[in-house]
Image (cartoon, rainbow, N blue to C red):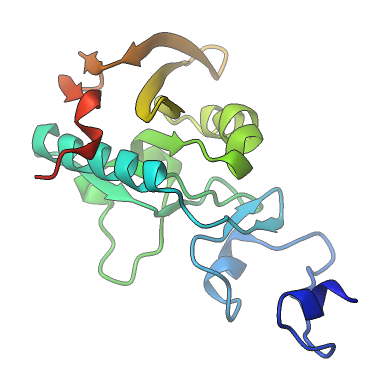
Length: 199
């Protein structure tokens, strides 16, 4: 039995085949029928598995809390891609961006210099990407702050990293349980135990 038949696809189904050299960041907007939240990593399309409840709740908590606290020159977005270079266009779960990065309602990506904080909520299928691959790429692109969110007994634990501009490598500045309290890139105070609380 073919894998295609297992997933309800007939034998004539054609998967997208990459061109020589791989896909480019611009291809992501042009390829038809891509699943939602498809990313481009090293010229390869990465499809994400369905989100868990924790993943959705963690994104909601961070997005809403950050929206309440960002200064006027910054904004918060979720699930928008960053065009790091020709072969890489990852999609962080939450981003803090400069408000002047707004290119209009049809915008699908940001430049690295537009991004102040990139946040990844780790899923079972994204552990290696979120812990190793993406932080290296974000750091090389010059994104100043990276947060990795892990689940521990239903609550988020936030690992906060800041870019060393000399080495272009992130340094861990803190691991936060229960409460995320920071002074950079702006004053932040988030009750992480409120993940299940509705507004």
